[in-house]
Amino acid sequence: MKVRLHAVELGSRANGPGLRAAVWFQGCTLACRGCFNPGTHDAGGGYEADTESLAGEIAAAGGVEGVSISGGEPFQQPEALEDLLRRLRATPLSILVFSGYTLERIRALGRGAEILANIDVLIAGPYVEAQHLGRDLLGSANQRVHLLTSRYEFTDFAALPKCEVIVHRDGIVTVSGIVPIRS
Image (tube, rainbow, N blue to C red):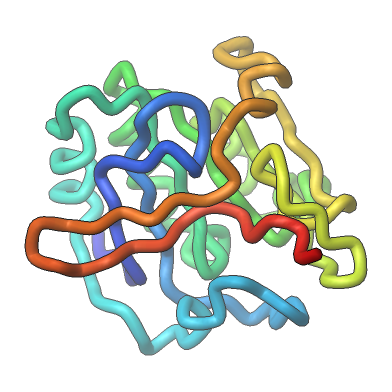
């Protein structure tokens, strides 16, 4: 199945517990003021990938504990998200998904319950610039961490780096994580 992506990082420590693969979906219509990933909004941007190949690439990444999926808004590509999650659920990797939707809204989506059944941790809620937080994987204070399985505890999110800079061998630089509170 095809999915529109913004980027993939196979070795992140700022997108959840342990070393993780981070996947940014492309496309978001939520238009949260002050969003720190505006380059992911254009549904025509990014590039097309295949969920089977992507899941295989992530599963083969050495030393990776889990995968974190962000965006854009992953739930705006529900079929591709569900297919990718089902493929990843067949591996030992943990699955964390960020969404600008609330848990209640996701449950009301056509495939919401099926998608949620494949997620260990959901970080949900729109980014609200006036409530900027920038810690524990929460961009703003209204967002919530939902532990959907017993794989993690809330304390697993307290000591994560707020952000990271990854310099690749080819010179490409990736900046990832949650923007900390500005002084």
